[in-house]
Length: 337
Image 1 (tube, rainbow, N blue to C red):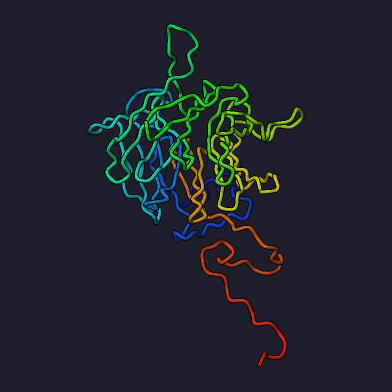
Image 2: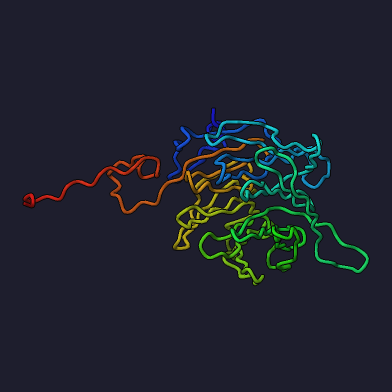
C-alpha cells in the first residue's frame, strides 16, 4: 500500500494530493520506498537514469558515521538500500542531507563536508571540508551544510543554514569560496539553480521566504510571509519542472506548493508527513519527495500543463507526456485534388 494511501486513511488526513497529480507514471505506478531512516533528499541521476535517497539515520548534527544512501534503478526498483554506508569500508558518511549528481559523481552535503561518491561503485572520490566565514581570529567555525546544487557550468553551490551562507565550489580545482553571507537568507535550506535564468533560488527554514541569489552573490527577496498572513513556515526543498513551474516543500505544515509561470501559488499536496528536500525528475515528469518522520519516500507523476482542453473532455495519458498525442483529425471540407 502506498504511503500516501496510508496517510489518507488517517482521520486527520482526509486529503493528500489535491491537484492534478497522477498516480500513474512512466515507471508503471506510484512508487513508495520504505525502510529508510530519516530520509532527507531524493534525486534523479540524469545520466544513468536511476535515483538516490539520503538517510540521516540518527541526529542531524551528529558525526556518528552511520548515514546511508539508497540506490534505485531507472524503473524505481530498489537496487541497494545501503548502496553507500557510513562506516563500511573506507566510507565516512555521518548525516547525509542534500545531494546533486554531476556526470558519474554523487555529491552529498554531510555536516561540514561536501563528499563525492562514484555512482557506479559507491566509492569516495571527494572530501572537501567547508568552513563558515570567520567570526574571530582564533576560530574557524564549522559549517552546517543543508543542500547542494549544480549550475551546469562546473560549479556547485552549498547552503549553510546556520551561518546564512551560500558557498561556491569549483569542481575543477576542488576549492570553495563564500558566495554570500546575508541574514536576509533566513536559514537557507534548499537550493536550486533556475534552469533558464541561471539564478540560484534559496528557500528559508527560519522565516519561510524564497530568495533569488545572483552568481555574483546579490540577494533579492522573491516571496515572503505578509504581516497578516503566513503562507510558509519551514521550507525544506525547491526545484523546477521542465515548464518552469517551481515546487517548494514546507516541512512543518506538510504541504507542497507549486508556483506557476505567472507567479500564482497553489497547494498541490497537503497533510504530508514531513516532506523533505524534494526534487523533480524533469525527464520523466516526476516529483520525488522524502518523508523524514515517516522513514519513507515516494515518487509521483506530475501533470503536463493544459493547453486549454475543455473541462468536459476526458484527459488521457498523452496530457501527462507518457504516450504520444493522438493524430489531429483531418480538416473538414472537400478533399483537395
